Image 1 (cartoon, rainbow, N blue to C red):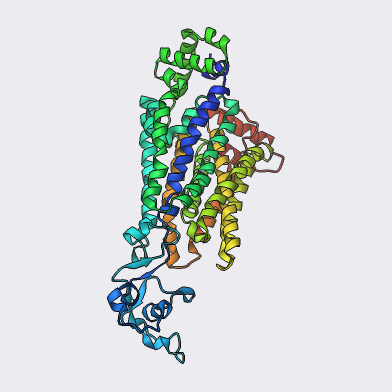
Image 2 (cartoon, rainbow, N blue to C red):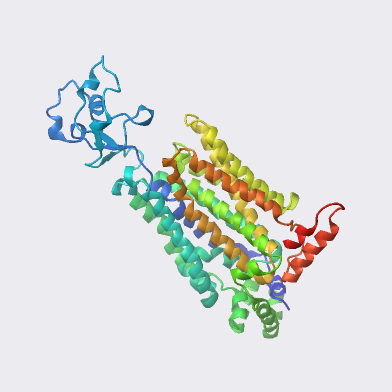
Length: 519
């Protein structure tokens, strides 16, 4: 008896799975706040150089009383872009001639200015404190902000690689108690195959709700240190109830822990109201399931196997590229909301709200348009929305924000699609390796995404060009993948090759079919 049959007996989608999913979606929401928090804790407030005439009471005492703050700002700070006070330079000496009504605004030279050698003054009307204002991550130090974001995302990549191996060795629940990067796996291994697409979509909605939650919390907490505390404290509660979560019965069987696996399955049957299954579950049935799981887990499962196995190389490269495109463009844009609009609280809410119908709609489209068409459309449309923003003047902030939100919604749809599509492209013996490789590619893209913003120093539209081109090209590359809708999941590499041969023999006359055999 296979493990999937045992799972059907105890209930593959019942009360237990619902409770388990809810218990894991809650920390997913708070985990999203950790990823998006830098939009608020690292927001860049309006700033200018510190100057004596405005910020030193002794210097102000010698100023004629007829001069107000606006006049003092004019003689102390040169105009910058859009004729606003320059953020990174000040006059070496007050330029009193600029107050002459007969003078001109250009009656000064660049040599009369200098960097902000005495520090900066920040606008604290929106945020009382941010890490940018605390450590002066502006002007010549502005590159440190995207670098810090990339370092944080690098930590997630390392954690996923390390704790993924640890969870295979010591169990899902123990690792989950300390690291919530393994949450989705615990849900999936307790869910029947028929319901996994639905559960994966609902699970990913936790990230959508987390976007809205982040904006709500940040709107009420404007100090970066207090905000960090507020979004981190709920994990203590998650730590407490994580001990209730059931260990993966499949993992227990693979590790030969039959008695513990039997207890977990009986507990699930009781919660799901499957009283008959409690009586029929025996050690012999579990032993049979264990043998099947062990036989399936003995196949090679290294990334090299995906590239070297005939028929899988192209699938691996293209699907990995789609994962990379999602992480690269999504995090590159979503972690710099200030570049997309003035009201970052509203933008954060809109990203989460639009993401919900995008993911639900994707689940419906996957069964109507197919996997390949949905994957191509979601990536290409997302990229086109980003590229369109290059043509929109900065004065049209509402239109720029709308295009950005639609693009991020398309990327959310692309993520839902690639999560399901990748699982269907590869045989059982290599499926988890392929998904893991894709997730690592997405995290690698997320690491590089924020750094692309540094290209803005060479051209304001260059980052948007790169962010838009990557998903468009990746979406077009997805046309090379085979359609997997309504096909049985392949268990072996031979099954993949047989599917390719069947597709080749069904191709209409006059069409080249050699490509199909290389998928």
